[in-house]
Image (cartoon, rainbow, N blue to C red):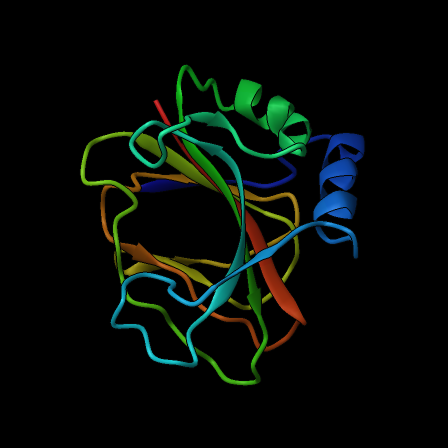
Length: 165
């Protein structure tokens, strides 16, 4: 159903990505909807779009000056065509919160989540869960229902979501 790989990148590659995305100059953008428009007022997060496909915008392609940081991951996951690459930053609000299950796209494609920090904000895939760990990647079918959650043991939960063929 899914595959977890620890220490996915070598330390230098990982640290460059981590220091950039967790640094105080990285541009994160507020989003008041996590899974759908029925989300309550206490459900929000910050995103950074690295790449969008034509299905999401009139001008597909690289949407971030930070895309270069992810080239080693794109190559290593054997990506032939990118649908979307999006960074996710969920803040700790001092309560556990599991978000509504969703699919990224309703068609068959590949996906993975690359975690930048250790925390207890699990990713739920079917009836299983994956704990975020720095430099861990989880490969799964994002056309099947999955959900994220908030952490309570770190200031933030940060990952990068890859959808691709």
